[in-house]
Amino acid sequence: MTPRSRSVSFVSFVGLRVREQELLRLGISLPGLENRHAAVAELPALGLLTLAGRLPSEWSCSYHEVDKWEQRLVDQITDEDPGIVAISALTASVKEAYGFSNALRKRGIPTVIGGLHATACPDEAANYADAVVVGDGEPVWSQVLQDASLGQASGIYRADRPFNLNESRPPRFDLAAALPRSRFTIQTQRGCPFACEFCAASRLLGVFREKPAHLLQEEFETLKKIVRRPVVELADDNTFAGARDHRELLGVLSDTGLRYFTESDWRIGERVALLRDLAASGCVQVLVGIESLVHSYRGFGEKRAELCRVMAALEAIQDHGIAVVGCFVLGADGETKGSIENLTKFLLDCSLADVQVTLQTPFPGSPLRQRLAREGRIISDRGWDYYTLFDVTFIPDCMTVSDLENAYRELAGAVYSTAENKRRSSIRKTVWTKSRIARKLRCSQSQERS
Image (cartoon, rainbow, N blue to C red; front, top):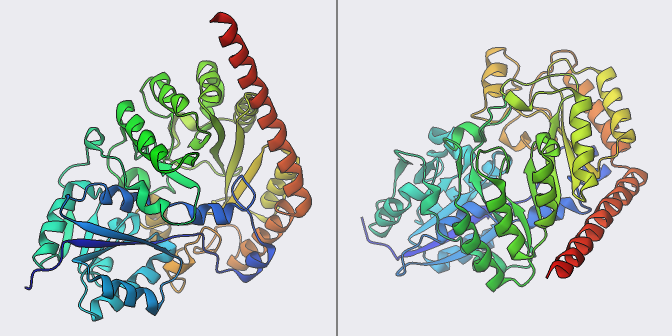
């Protein structure tokens, strides 16, 4: 085949997606901060930026983020004449990615696709792209580039081992900074030590690994050279679930002087020393999966506990000036109209700074999907574009599909009403006021000691 240019066009399909028209009308805002939809859409594709950071010096690249592809983007990339186009997409946007890839291939431009969906469905993805990366991209990236330069990139590239995060390099944050945004993501770990039934990431990404603190410090310093005051979200499934000493990681985060968000489980609320250091390090918000009030998913491990204990831990987190976004999954086994009404009342009464309520979604690669498929409960005529977290894709065990859809709409209308958004906004302000007071007190104490 004809050798091609040593350049890569990175294309990410980003943003939240909702098919359900009534939910669109309600204008759900989630999770946490106002305008969260826009905030999520603003997050760059960390996987692609990470691969861009591993390009050899003789390779060039471009970076594009789209919600839906248009012909003008195909024309633009055709003009760039890349050796290969690297595409990233989640399940809900993968049909868009497939259509885009096919349009490029008709122009004679080779494509490679990766990510969680492609990892779970590599044979499917291979129908729409010249090459598919399964699992971690770093171990096979050099081979993809070498094959692409020769015009021979094809088939499935699968790493023979999980990537060692000790070999990490800083992502190309500068590519994302060229677009209008203030939010960036940094990954401190990969995978998850737990194996919740609805989650595919803990299995598809290989064994749980944590990135060394000195490499994280290098990434933060790289980012701060590009953006003076970035808003950072840690792209972790459960930041403090591992065995490492939290003080080393939080020391790095504290040294950045930045405010950041992360995800963890409720147990950090019972770790007094961690909470104190977490608040001091600049953490202002944490997403915590409470999941379901009626069903206990398999694989929770040490996260399994009574609701009263979980909520006490979350109150402790907020008492330290860190806003908690409680995340709930609707539609698990045992869910009824009555249980959804009870959840609605609970959410209207709780003191969480914000809440996220999504529908149970059997993503490819998850044990949940495998179980529901065995039970004949996957809705076959609702394709991947329904896998938005806001559209029903399975048959509930105690309700009809339409019952669950209607109940979710009613819950959303109540929980995300103007009055409720104002109430939770007031809670956030109160929580963050505690944080500011605590920071001033620590600063004053530090000055007195010095």
